[in-house]
Image (cartoon, rainbow over all chains, first blue to last red; front, side, top):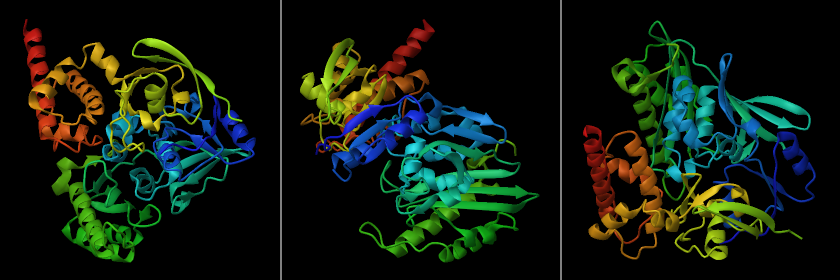
Length: 296
Length: 170
């Protein structure tokens, strides 16, 4: 199907983008990579009056280390995330996740800011951002505010971005010594949305887990943390008993719905399988498969 | 009233200037305005891969890009890549191995396969069949069952790798 008619404006700066949005009498949408927006337009699930093309705003590009954070511009393409040496060094979970994201041609255009702004709970990046403890720079007429990933995702496709605001950059904290992280997912076919996906970030000190952050995708209305499973891991060595305890505790964290593709029980089962798989890979026994934080 | 916008795009090496309505996709622009009907339109939502073209040397779905967005950029379609000879080996291998039946998906597959093989070549490796299937995961073929397509691409990968090694040795 073809999209309904809309007007189009290409902008060169963030202030220009915000002004264009404020000046639109009807509905306006920011266009970045367009890999989710254009299908929605072509299916006529969405029919805005104006597309504001932010794809040429140089200030939204680039990946750089700034102090104790890795700052990733919102227009970073998934293919760039996949290839970035800085991302591989400081946030290897994102490198691993990018390999699962859609197909190569989609990754050439789709952007990190676009995926997070859409907040699809089945997408990889939102779950990773919660696991990584990332924060987002959101700019509006009042200036720029920082929102933690844990406070950003509100409900199905709903997030903390107010109408007209723009997600400009993602701040990922650099891993502290002893950090181990990994992303894996289970999907029916390569490039399909995950039946369940998991980004895990553990910090070990003296053989003991001192911090655990788990971010699941495709198991709820938002990317989901798993506080009970995280608590079950914290304060113990990463061994078979800890993994079993985390898997058992996961039942207190996740309550996936039934849907056409999978029963709730099957999805819960896959979440436990995946949690066991990822934690085993992060343990010393699975160490060759795990990627340690650079500072470890 | 939504005004058509002027764009200048380098398509298959030649600069074309047109006025386009914002809603027109790159795929419809190539097919309708320029008559380049080798770019096929299947699903129009970025799933089937039949419309994939190179945009500044990277494969993208022409159905998920607006013509107005590509102002100032370079687009190479299956016609241009075919005329330049870049696809000749792949086309011959697809022919020899019967890697197409109706041919609807073939333009997108050729563009993706050529990009993938060039990346493999730059890395000095011959891709596994699994890696080839991975690269083609965004291209649907409803005729062949993919086996012959993977055969053809694997054959070209081996031929090119062997030639590169002989050239290195010489």
